[in-house]
Length: 234
Image 1 (cartoon, rainbow, N blue to C red):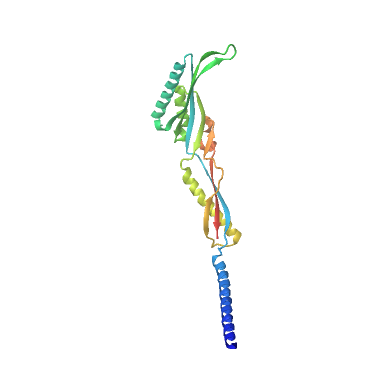
Image 2: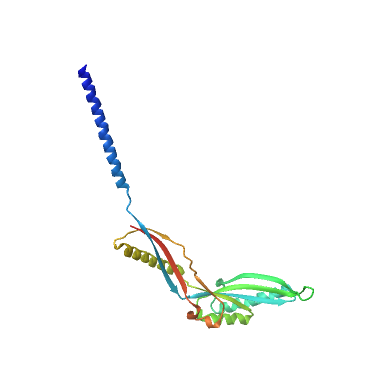
């Protein structure tokens, strides 16, 4: 009987020891997993850069206003002026594809000082055309005004290769972020993990009222192209 009791106690002791070893192994394995899954610390830096460019093209916004006692006559006179302007511009190298009619309207003109009677009819056309040579803007304006164009609303100055310059500015913004990170950490072996583009207000156009004295680029001003990036490094 004692022999069987001793044998049972030995078996029970072996089982308990086995579970203890297994529990210890599992606990140690969990500790190893924690270290293995631990990620390398990262941090983020904002990089910014700007590029100022002189515009190299422009969109001219013009309008034609005609008045007549008959609405159809007002409209016909308006279209005659427009056709003349398009022909003049075409002769000067502005193709018809670069001339766009943006608005047309015809409406009565009232005499508000008496009985609000109709005294005539206005017809109005707005159109735009693109200019590649800024030095010739005055010549284009003079030509269409000779046809009867009554107003130059404004001139929209642009940079033709805006996207290309913006991409180059983003590279400068990335380098700015790397430089900041290096100065903050004192390390020169940092690696980029992720780059995200941040919103920043950036106007790609310059709107100016027409003036013969503002045709030269130095008087028009420059277009500022800005890029902002959030860069995660480790």
